[in-house]
Image (cartoon, rainbow, N blue to C red; front, side, top):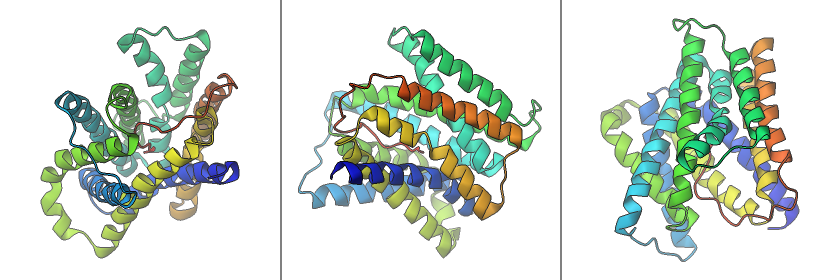
Amino acid sequence: MNSRQAQLAIHLTALLFGLTGIFGELIQASATLITAGRALFATVTLLLFIGHAGHRIAWPQRRSWLALALAGILLAIHWTSFFVAVKVGGIAIATLGFASFPAFITMLEGVLFHERPQPSEWAVVGLVTLGLVLVTPSFDLRDQATIGLAWGVLSGLAFALFTLANRKAVSLMPGRELACWENLVVTALTLPWCFMEFTALRPLDWLWIFILGVFCTALSHALLVSSLARLKARTAGIVIALEPVYAILFAAILFAQYPTLRALAGGALIIGAIVWSGLRRSGSEPAATAPSAPKTPPAD
């Protein structure tokens, strides 16, 4: 993959991440079932991809299981709460709520890893917080959109914790194997709660879940890994920050879900803070080789 192909791949990754909320809206099923189906199809796809590449997935060592279980639990919470946010508050609200996760990472790193955030990082936290205040439709917990935003923020918090948990897990096995095991944990956690619901799924819903698991999860992870072999992580992060833009655009086109001007202003603050955070990093940052887990990535 050359530099131009890597740029295309990272933009396609952001696009796939942005489509996650769209499928959450399209699929007529519970958030738990969507999460279970997504993880199941992603696991099978990653197993086939790794096998096709001529690799074998090693059984995790005993010391790896705790890290894998923790990461899988957090990923399950992240996905489930995000799809609840989509169902309750709409795609734009859910995506902007989730976009708060960089602020949570900044705060949690200081608490969990005793890493003192820089003043500029606290500025990002402040901008994201102000953006969330603007995005909040009202401060009445009886407001469905406000409840949806709260679920979106919970999704962002879970993803931040998931990201930090992977700081430990990534040292234990290759990234694609780690993603496969984590998706398997998500499947095991969620499938028992919604197994009987699968019998009532429409054929079209099966198709949407298949696309969500294969393309928006497994393929997006593979594209992210491949693009980071040529791009700086800073550059990739700035492009991925466009995920809410894609999500809001698709929601407006497909479902006529138009955010208010106040919500757009709040979203601009959140996305701007994330992009600024990426731009302020050192331009000498080396290209990464492989991330520890999918986005969503995002991704969701």
